[in-house]
Length: 193
Image (cartoon, rainbow, N blue to C red; front, side, top):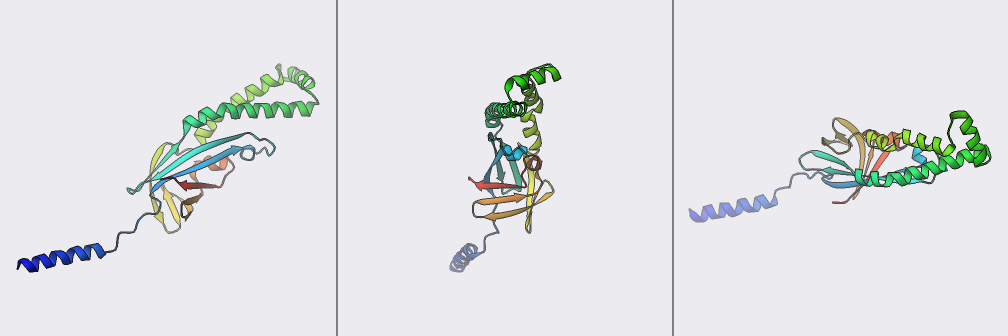
C-alpha cells in the first residue's frame, strides 16, 4: 500500500511537471518610450531645438499598467528648449523685418515692447511645461489593461499594438490627446526590464 501511494505520488509529480504552463502575458515587464519634442512636433520644420520626454509603462501580471513620466528630467531640460525656441522666434522676427533695429522699432510701436520682451512673454504664456504634462493625460497613473486579439485595452480604450521581441508599438489614443499634440500617431517602446 505504501509503495502504491509512493508510486502514485511520483506519478502526480511527473504529470504536474509535464502539464502545460498557463499562457504568459507577453507584455509583462517594463517598457520605455523616448518621445521627441522638436520642430516637427511644433509644426516648425526649420527649428532645430529638441526635447525628449521619457515615458515608462510597466505592465504587471495582475492586469495593471503603470504610466510614469520622468517629470524631473522634463522640467530640467525645458529651460534649454524654451531658450532655443525664444532664439528661433527672435531670429525669425529679425529676418522678417530686415534687421533687429527695424524689428524692435516696429514691435515698440505695435505693442510697446522690444522683440525680445515680446517673444519672452509669448514663450512664457505658452506654458510648455503645463502643455506637455497636461497633454500626456495618463502620466503617473495606474490603469487596468488586457489583451483582446490584436488590441491592447488600457482603461477601457482599445489601441492597436504590435509586439516584436523587445519592441512594442502602440497606435491610437493611449495617452489621451498627448501624442496627437506632439504630432505623433504611434508610441514606440523598448523593453527595459
